[in-house]
Length: 248
Length: 182
Image 1 (cartoon, chains in turn red, cyan):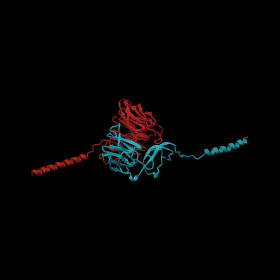
Image 2 (cartoon, chains in turn purple, yellow):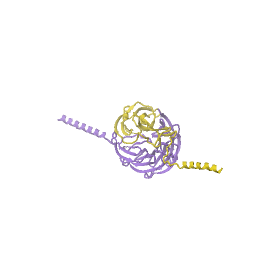
Image 3 (cartoon, each protein chain N blue to C red):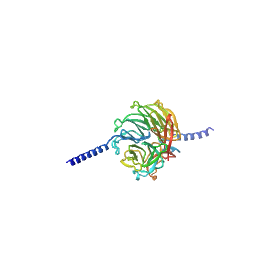
Image 4 (cartoon, rainbow over the protein chains, first blue to last red):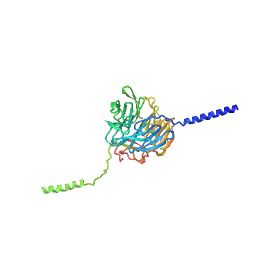
């Protein structure tokens, strides 16, 4: 009898352990995403993968990360180009406007506000109160204005343009704390002080490459340049030092 | 004297009036510019288009969008796949592998899963072993990122030449006398 009891205890314990380990494998705790640049059309936020093509926003649940589930599709308009997420919001750039969507219900993004601008290509980065947008005129974007635009989004239902800084050929941009990095194509990488968030102050220009986009990772700037990528170290007093280029 | 002037001026006036009364053309033909920024097709083969696999590192030819996770940099090779580059030591970055993804343009990564576009399919790739990545899910024809007929932006573009293969993407470049536009 004792042997049988022991056997039963072991059997039950084993079954319990097996069941528990199976359960933990089905956890839906959100995983850890990386970082894309401001030119991206894919972004991961709130355990969802958000995608924009030329006309629509797609929201895929990553509750089961290996099998994304389409939860909603939103018709945005035309010439949609970029997507950027910050906390519970999506910022979407198109040739005509910047759109702000709420992720309060992550499966069903809902429109909060929009700000039209002159016809141009436009990536967006943002924080709680300000959105920074570059507009670039040109043969594939239409329009004639190239600039850095600053929008007050403290009332997110009604973004208000507060500042325009003309630039020559701006592409992507990166934002961290009170520093804004703007890729101005062949004209360099501009570093702005955002102590006055509405009026970015140009601190320096990094020359020598054609800059298209930038990702800030700890004290590293990872730049998409013509021909590949370049890595810059961020140091004291806004030092920006090239560490390496990968172009072949 | 007056008579000879008159015999010149009248026909001349008639000629001028004839030309200025041409029917109005609302859509005059556009002349291709000698040099302009625009899109050109990237050619590949649709026959092998859905094969997702790792290869040894390759040269960066058309370096596209970038993504960073866990000391690793990923850069799209427009229309072809993704370069995987270690940046654990930023002064000596080195390529780890290349992931072939036909039509590739975009990506995002969560944990060990890469989400990318294989033309207009969304694919999920397990990149835990970068030398041997594995496709784990595919949602076909789910968005419209790559168009076989025309580029993602407006303006002049290099016309598609079917004899060069299937269109797997578009790249921006300087075009000389492009013949297509939209």
